[in-house]
Image: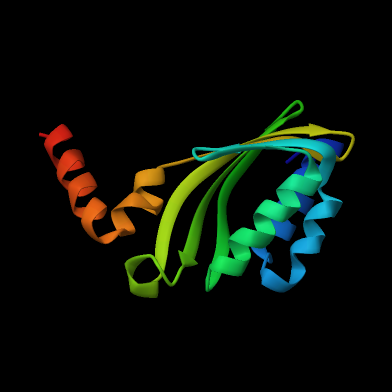
Length: 149
């Protein structure tokens, strides 16, 4: 069995995974060790430019949730691009009566000079948010069911 040396990109991805799997309200500052100052972050609901804005976004998100944690499943590096599949488990007092909800997703990262320059998350916003809201949730579930027929 041949063992290949870890590339700088793999090392960056391992650091990213390590930070995200231990991310909690009290250690959000650890994110500044992994993102570029001019990082671009996108998910189905947001586009955020610059680390300072991203830090503010994470701070407000983690202030509002009771708990939020990431479990990483698979990851791969291809040149400067990295891919991760994950499950985010969160509980928010205003969603599902504060019960835990899990959402599966994946992230595409562009790595530059040991940091993440672009972070794009892909997940079902309906599954994460809309289905957890009382009236809207029932409507979204019904629409999905009809689409599946």
